[in-house]
Length: 502
Image (cartoon, rainbow, N blue to C red; front, side, top):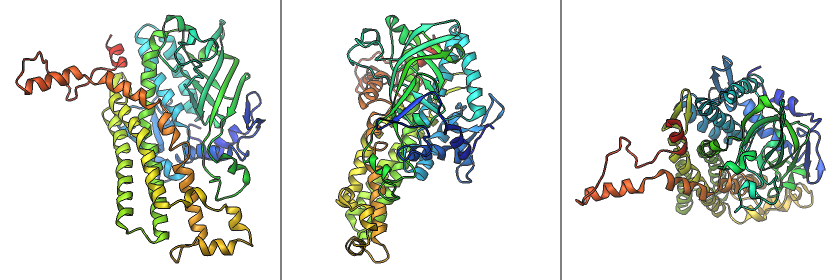
């Protein structure tokens, strides 16, 4: 059962006996049928369906040497730069099918991060973590489990380190250690798709010092575990999902984020992959962040494609598709979309091998990818709104369209070019509204995988300004101590690469 179908996935998450899941203050028992969460579940399901559909199964499957079987790529450990590029391509392709975040990437990136970090820790004498992780990975791959990656803590007072917080649970921490496992408390915030998952993989969210060792913890736990509470967050126009329509709510695919509370949760020792080793947290965060930032070049480019297509269709409905200013806007949207995608592919194909069978994305290109994603979706959305017109924010509801007293008027006054109906226009307007103005394309593009400031910090760390200055001095005929580097780029080694070499 290494590759499940979408229906098998749905069957596996219907019943939750231990974890508590809340939507708008009310507990939810079946996430597959609840109208608020069903669109998110269906987006998750698309990742399982992709492994069976003819146009995606080659991208969505990969061979795992850990279980000697094909696995769903979302549970795969990258084995080459081409594997990393396949990730970006798969994310773009799936965005075309969902028009939403499909929410499985963070858990995937967490798996690959732990593979690299447990290998590094094994080289430094901590072999038990690698043994545990390989056992867990095999379990995940054999069962084709849906994972949530949980990294972002509540963080409390941002200027204080974890051990300095007045709320000691502002970061997830180890409360108690027993011979069988650990007890943890705290919360992880804005966790993508968590209510629709089967396992939660928890990672530390920042570099830590010796006083923070109780917060230096990485582990996995079934989502349906005693002491776990999930509070699903609100998003723009989310109450439309409760209306039961098939136009306004875009009901088939969407995404959610949740606040995950760990209330004295027991974690068996064989699922603990970091316990107090604060000295590895900086590199762990660096590895995860780069993986996750690289992937954004695929999914956000895919959503860009959806927005471009919707904008083109609306221009046709209004009869302006050949207008020079519309063509210019569409061309600019294409440029912005392909730039994000190109950076993600570059981060993949210029990958870094940090240990045997450990392929990490290029950290500079990965951070560039995410920084482009933090900027360009807002520009793409603005251009799409310009083409679509103000109706994207003011259109009548589908209930008005379905009202017999109003339908004739709406059909008359919302129609543009003959051959397109008012319903055609309303459907495309709602699609464009949900995708271009939604959390997945706008807000997550800025803050997902770290804020823009975090990427700029990485640029300055990785780019060797002194080396570039010495190159310029040499060309200007000035005295210089330039020592040529073998690399073409004026880059420093990342913290992870330094750790591996040490």
